[in-house]
Amino acid sequence: MRYDAIAIGGSHGSFDVLLRTFGEFSGIELPPIFVAIHIPRGSAPDFVTHFNTRCGCRMLEVEDKQVPMNNSIYLAPGGYHALIERDRSLSLSSDGPVNHAQPSIDVLLESAALAYGNRLLAVLLTGASSDGAAGMERVHALGGTTVVQDPRTAKAPVMPQAAIDRFQPDYLVAPEMLARTIISLAGETQE
Amino acid sequence: MIDPDVLRIETDLVVAALFQRYGLDFRQYSRASLERRLLGLVEKLHLQHVTDLIPRLLHEPGFVDRMVNGIAVNVTEPFRDPECFSAIRQHVFPVLRTYPYFKIWHAGCASGEEVYSMAILLKEAGLLDRAQIYATDINTDALARARDGIYPVESIARGEKNYLAAGGTGRLADYTLQQYGSARFDSSLRENMVFSQHNVVSDEVFGEMVLVMCRNVLIYFERELQNRVIDLFQRSLVHRGFIALGAKESLQHITGGAAFECLDRHARLYRAI
Image (cartoon, rainbow over all chains, first blue to last red; front, side, top):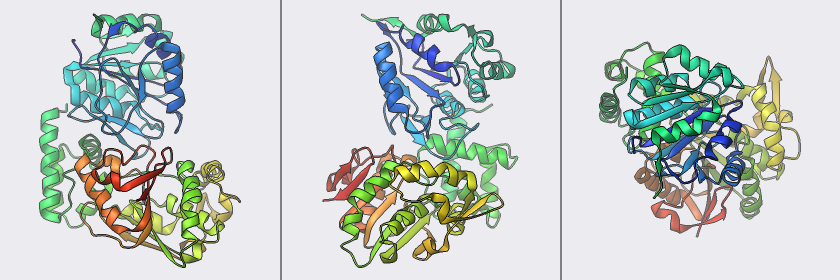
């Protein structure tokens, strides 16, 4: 595989985009996917159940010291930041909101960029804050590939636009093209 | 731009300086969070590199405290994870009733919201008079805030729902004096509290505790250090004492974990066997 991990951030409006996208991943071999969306404390189990039921995917809530596996999606729990350690295990912190958010997309992406370098595919979706823009910029600077939702297709364009204002993403995509884009970049057909 | 390998070396050097000069051991802290805190400190102090922290650390009196307060940060709120508090009411309070006098330790109490939360529940159960509550943290800024017990009124307002979910019987705001946007917890709650700086990584046992609350501290540690800290707690507990962990922590992979039974998986409440 060309990438060792995929990291996805989003906020307002991103839930529908993710439901649609993850539903198209069945039968495709993908590296571990980390997801940070702005969800409230204690809500992750409901999100996990919903995604797994609707999309037939294998989503788990991020646990401290967890070792990520292929074909699995790891959701950052509300009230915590999810980070990637250099040995590529997952960790959590609770040191306060970043960009008014916990989990913060920047925290996930910045640590993932350090851990994975050019082996990371990062995706930033619709959202009403600029969380994630700095993280995407670091992913870009450290050789990772960046995919940003086209702000014209976003329910809340602030988030993708904030990233575009900082650097030029590798791909700008509409929600209906996102799954195909990720699969063509990072996926392999399962034997 | 950041070079990951250089950042790793710089972090090692800062950690070495902290340890060799001050005996402060961050060597087994989870690195991703530590690196982020160090980078944040560099930005806040308008420095260029993480290693620019080292000369100040070695030569500037008092800088070490600023630094520890900048990197050992945990943020909490009143009745965070109410299921934890209601599980303590259900499983621990009946045991506390059997003691004429008992001790509770909040290890890593951060800014203290959960210490006051505990005191309120004890008070409502008629147990506060018998309690000695130790609240410790490595972070002196946080500890000072805990000692003051003054929080933004919004924080208290947000805590009302969790307070009720934890089994509170009144109104959280009624335990505070509110003035100019700040809320100060009633001094009667503070009477049996002792605040002190303590480092769970290197300092000694706090003896004869019936309950150790250590929530959202273990997540910052690597596995081996987690094992050591749980061992410290085990030695700090009375026979059949209790440990309450954060919502994302467990004793499942901890070496000494087999010495505890899990009373409530969701609330992360454990009892020594």
